[in-house]
Length: 321
Image (tube, rainbow, N blue to C red):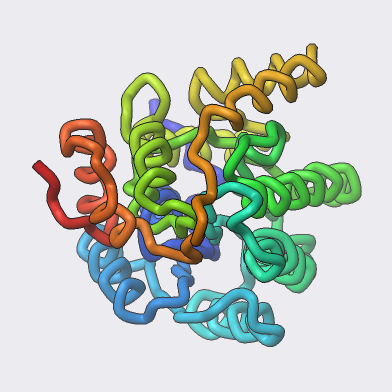
């Protein structure tokens, strides 16, 4: 008996933030199921490498370098998709930026950058894509928010604020599009082993902030294998699921936030008191690969995360003993 065709086979997908990490893996998973995939990211060199990597596995992949926060980005991206593959069927909003540090070390511009990247950019791109998606029999929007879009994790406030907004838009969009045939899936991942600790931006005391974030993003009990996450995300989108929460820790946190929000915030406040202070002269915007040089964390703690970063094209830190 012949297995049924995947719902995304022969469809056209656009995945933002797909030169590395989770975005690259989602793009690969879609391509493996027969979709035509347009990759998008800011760095042309990294994007070219990603296209070559996926191109060795499928011929239905192309790339377009673009900063999604530019006002003309939606029209340029959709034009590129139309020229290469035709109308768009699947939009995956995945691009993001992680800024780590205490509130005292953060600036207004950090919040604005987070909101532009993870709220306004996907908002504008989604609205521009709706004409194509409504006309498609497989119109799908996947918004990769975060468990930080449901739980206000300390020392991640710009990220949390933007992800709360992004998750709210995605969930509201599903309600607004009910009956149109367009499916919207909101993804709330916990920490995943993609090597994101090397690409995150650190503020305050970069070495100390890197220590806790890199450990959490690398250790098996706290983080999830990113390839397994990408498979789960594409499967949830194919099944038209409204929401997907990834990692056991994230599922526990989301349930606790829903049942006892006041208690959850109190516990997060206690956690914040245990985290590093901003220092007398806080640093700003130090990339993870540089913050790693200020870290005293043993290499074995981040071994799984570093390995994933090398595999999924994240910046690589200098090796530590």
